[in-house]
Image (tube, rainbow, N blue to C red; front, top):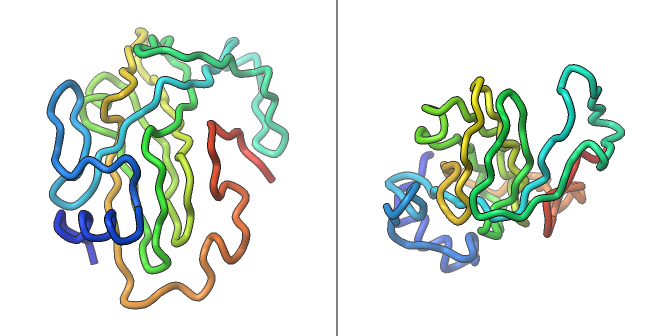
Length: 183
């Protein structure tokens, strides 16, 4: 069942599910905070920007090469056309055992050709989320740190899952920084 704003506030307090937690939608800049049925989270000022021509540099999810990325710390990142960067959330998440999240990019960025790829936050996953920010536009696009980047929707099961992300010792659990793919 999709959960509403009162439930999100209760869970955020009970489980420290989102820290820092903004209990109201902040509309200054690109909005963030608690919304009707979800939470709009923010992007930090830390990025790993893909460098090189995408058609010339093969990427291998089984063997990521950190030299394909340039670490950048900026309040406004200008993301080149037809490329991508990895970022991380400002918020640290602790997902309860009976919750699954679904994530969507914010429409403000989608209208500029910027798409987000964030996998679901599984039951008992915790950490700062690594976000793929993809500029599909033919022009550079500005990404604003400290402002909203995507929205989480929370789905609650009637009982906890049999095996959580923590139970299976998920490789991205408790990540503290932008994390490249792992196998």
